[in-house]
Image 1 (cartoon, one colour):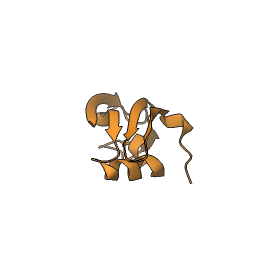
Image 2 (image 1 turned 180 degrees about the horizontal axis):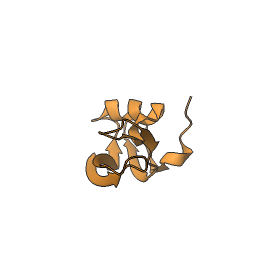
Image 3 (image 1 turned 60 degrees about the vertical axis):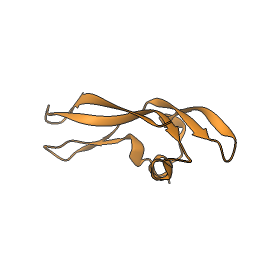
Image 4 (image 1 turned 90 degrees about the vertical axis):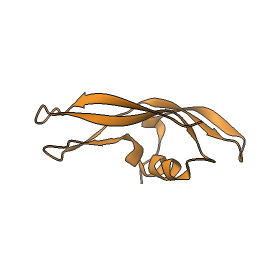
Length: 82
């Protein structure tokens, strides 16, 4: 089961508060679009709604891919960005 969590974050540039959607767990079978975002690094990007600056918000989450029998805790900082 994929579990989203909405956190309030404050932009370091302009001080505007906004919502950042994080995931406590991601199921690859049911949410392949999130796996693509994870692989591209987009899953950890927060964009300020006022000034448009983008920031990386690293956080750990549980990754499940039952088709490949893969499971683990994935720290965002360990993902390779290309």
